[in-house]
Length: 332
Image: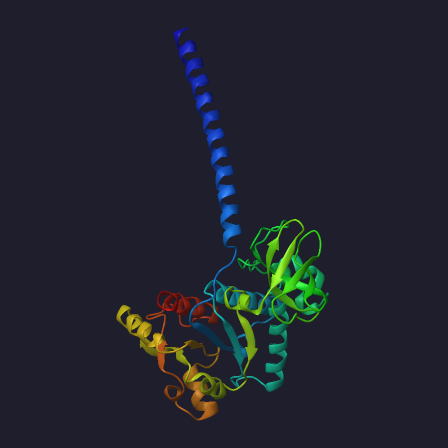
């Protein structure tokens, strides 16, 4: 009898404590949600780097993938990796281990998937037509750039990517993923129709926005894409402005002291150009066999970013993560 009383009392008391705990968790969840929403309103974007960071990879990295499915996933993983580390630009170059026609085909495929992946989800279905080359886009991981992560309700002073529907003298009408199209006033010349632009919400009721090219200098929107087929032309173009790093297992082993020295070298340049070789031939072979030059003549330093690697080969996307993780420590 005593046990029954004690047992029921213990049970009742703990039920009360549990209920009280649930109320507290709900309260905290609500508070954190409001706090998070307030933080998103203040700053819903990732800032661009102070120093430019460019990555160059050969189109042949796609050639070894056996199907469109694997090619699509590799492209998506590369773009997502570059976005994580706020890479400003991705350059595709030709390493001559494949036919030129194959290079052109792979570049066109890369461009299609890149353009689809870099469009915010709230605009993608409206802007991307059905295409057999994009049939595996449903398998890729979401890119989830901070600039993509917006709600259907606008917040004051937030940045959004928007599609220009109509152009006037001093304003444009855009689709910004809201319930209605909004008017966006231009600080300078208005963009053309069918462009995707970066806008800032300046009014909630009614929803209004502002457009300025200066927003592009502030907000990180993912890596821009370009192609420059010749590796020598690529390095020559950036030789005076960027610190050029080639990656190779035959390069100097990365250490803490070296990273400290690299940080000082970066300060004297406008940024960094990071080069990667192909799946069949590394940068030493590409430079010597196809361009008849020593790799050291093209770059400032050759680094081994994965010393004592445990596998015989390292895939490009794996090398990207390793190299960019190190540069992220010393490049602002």
